[in-house]
Amino acid sequence: MNRKERFNQIIAYFKEHQPDAKTELNYRNPYELLVAVVLSAQCTDKRVNLITPRFFDSFPTPFELAKSDVEPVFELIKSCSFPNNKANHLVAAAKILVEKFNGDIPSDINDLQQLPGVGRKTANVIVSVVYDKPAMAVDTHVFRVSARIGLTENAKNPTETEKQLVKYIPEKLLSIAHHWLILHGRYVCTARKPKCEECGISAFCKYFEENLKI
Image 1 (tube, one colour):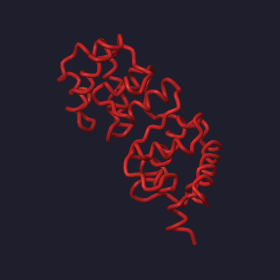
Image 2: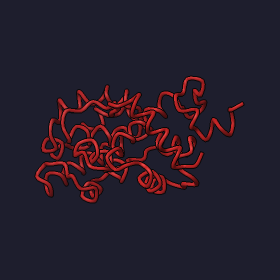
Image 3: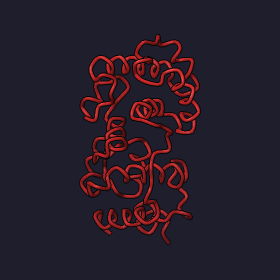
Image 4: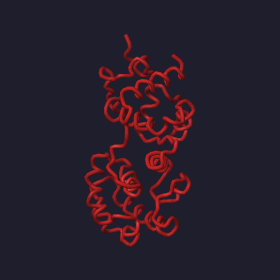
């Protein structure tokens, strides 16, 4: 099976079995998603969803957050990973949102990456989820799963992974494909021990083909 055939088979499977895949982060507007995605770096969505209700009660918009000192933000997010860095990033990002974008969340990837704590992955999540633009966000799950199942070859970093995925995945499916790969990596193709016995794409998977197929 060549790579194009593998992509076609895997896409067909997910289109049938996960037609409504979406982020597991809770949010009500673009600002809340931005905060949640920043907090989710090296932290579980479950933990973030426990933190954000109180956070948004205190800072419902970028305007309130921009006026805050870092300490109150830290106190609200201290149970997530790297709370010091994230508290500083969130306050600094809010100031830029207010000063440069009138409190609105930009729809442009380059504008988003001007915000502290927002890299290309986070920017791609925002533009794809909120603004329905064709973008492939590559987090640790997407990077690992894409390589394991054979969608990418010798990709050394997320940028190389992104380039290979967008080459083969139809533009209109890029946003949902991001969620397909994340959820597959989170619940089936787990890092330590993939659950190949319950995986629906094992017949098309390079890892299964090379290591487990009898």
